[in-house]
Image 1 (spheres, rainbow, N blue to C red):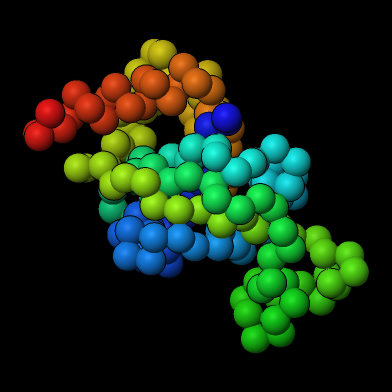
Image 2 (image 1 turned 90 degrees about the vertical axis):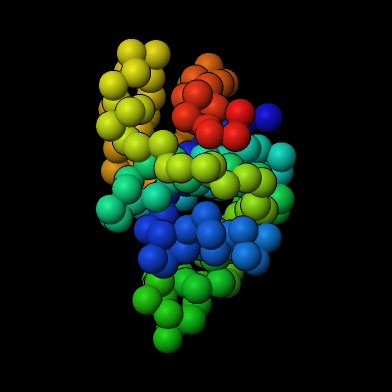
Length: 156
């Protein structure tokens, strides 16, 4: 099993949306490095930190699990979609989706500032290459993040 961080703007699709629908296609990725990770490394059973970006409280909001491996993103073929790609075809798709399922919403978003201030996370891709929308997370980083979330829980 691998660990990942998937970024999303919560006004488009966030942890609350995933909690409501339980399972969703993770689509609209239009960065080749992120696409390659989805296509070549993300697998069923992998765990995902769902990260809220471009919002008031930027940070990790919860956990999802990959439930369907990479397949062509159908939005690339839809001329009415903002993710339409006229250079892509069903015979030669350029963009990839995976399906994820809701696991847990954290009691509060773990802010990016807290992540950046933790010396155990200084090598995390999020800290070094923050703009990438799909990022690997090491097992150690995953445990550190969960430990930070658990310390902040009011119900624990």
